[in-house]
Image 1 (cartoon, rainbow, N blue to C red):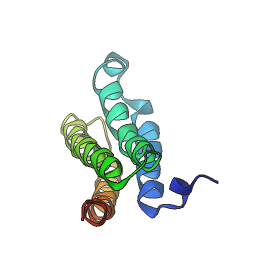
Image 2 (image 1 turned 90 degrees about the vertical axis):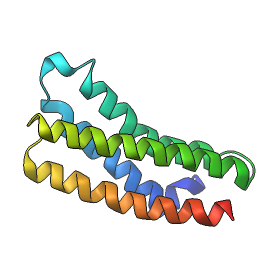
Image 3 (image 1 turned 90 degrees about the horizontal axis):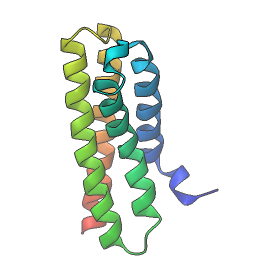
Length: 117
């Protein structure tokens, strides 16, 4: 098993990406190449950058990719907020995803700080 699979932060980020994909299945078809695509790419970028950074050599490289992952998480949070404003996401789904982004953010920031030091 790849070592990154055992990281709790990756597991949470992977869960977030999976849930975003499921939540966006019902977005309007005219958003397929707009908001749906952008939100999915941002959410998928969070665990992807954790994996890529963890697969590199050295903490400096890992920290750089974790920083990118943090940026993608911020983008995901905003796009979820915007999707909720447009009423593309039911309130319950938005609240669940918003909570999950917060949980990922806490773990990701803590991991970044440890690696950066």
